[in-house]
Amino acid sequence: MTPSRLHALAAAGTSTWLDYIDRGMLASGGLGRRIREDALAGMTSNPTIFEKALAEGAAYDAQVQAGAGMPSRALFEQLATNDVREACDQFSGVYRDTAGVDGYVSIEVSPDLHGDAAGTVVEARRLWKTIARPNVMIKVPGTDAGAGAIRTLIGEGINVNVTLLFAVEAHDAVIEAYLAGLEDRAGAGHAIDRVASVASFFVSRVDTEVDKRLDAMIATADAWGRTVLAALKGRAAIANARLAYELFERRFAGARWAALAARGARVQRPLWASTGTKNPAYRDVLYVEQLVGPLTVNTMPPATLDAFRDHGEVRDTLRGTAAGARATIAALASHGIAMPDVTAKLLAEGLASFEKSFVTLLGGLERKTAALGAHAAGAMQGAR
Image (cartoon, rainbow, N blue to C red; front, side, top):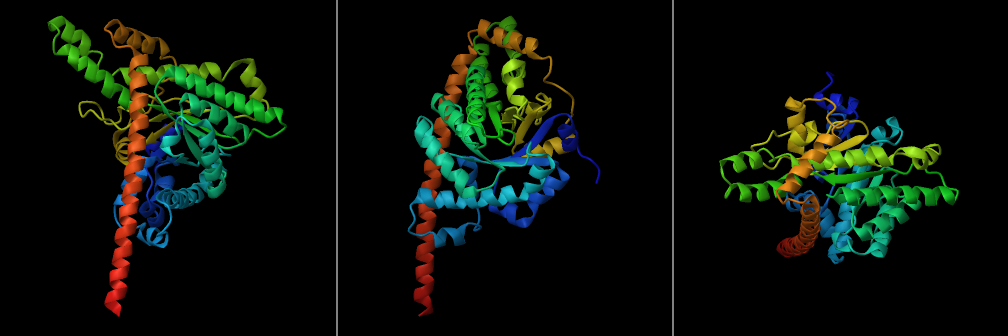
């Protein structure tokens, strides 16, 4: 088999994970093919992805019908954990061959727990125990409450995918939670060499928000102003992510990290999320090509993965880029676009969006359960 661009991406230090899951892919052999041919090394899921999977086709109908009478939350958890367990099994070879660096599948705690540290810990423990695979990661939002939960979970040896990170400051807080959790675990005499975590830093949504603000300014600017402002479009997201990578390099160095690394600890890799290009004016693999570097992950939707396989270019675009990134953020600030304001808005919107998807998903599941029950009752009556 000829190595693909995705194999070259892996060789450059960026693991490819798929931001998608559905039962059809798991059953058809499609996931195994991507693992073999595309160097696919992991998978992520979220409420929006499961909402789409459950709404399409009949792959889940038998299990939904068998679960009639269960509360919708419990039924959804059963459906989702079955899929994630199966995906974990299909990635078990990757997990083994990479000695636990890759091969992970992520499942998210209920989005309405984002402000509840104790509730997050309880649900994360249950998901970890239910799936019962060493290569599952429990997704926890990178909120203030989430950081507290992350420390507890890492201390208990539960793998964590920290999600919905937009601000470099929030990234710093979850790195601290990860390090402290490892220290707690090591201090209690437990092994830390198989505890894994990634920090999912969202990318494209930053450009969507910043470009919207720039366009509003461009509409009323003079000719020179329009040129200056237009030159800043499509640059904020990459700059923000590159500063997150600089932070990662800085925090996972020095005496504190060396003490943990000596006991076999793994770094908490930055994971670039929301990497599908939303603006058709931009290159469709922009948020992959511009974030390539050692010890990173890029979780791509299927279309982006396919596009990169077709025409992606691989070179190190992360190391040594922090100075330029800071200049971009400073230029935006000089025009009144402050990154803390942007990222706070995006976090609030992201939490609300995932919670809305979760509510929609549960409602759709209730309707599907009722419809399947009515169909089964009608079939039985017709057979009499």
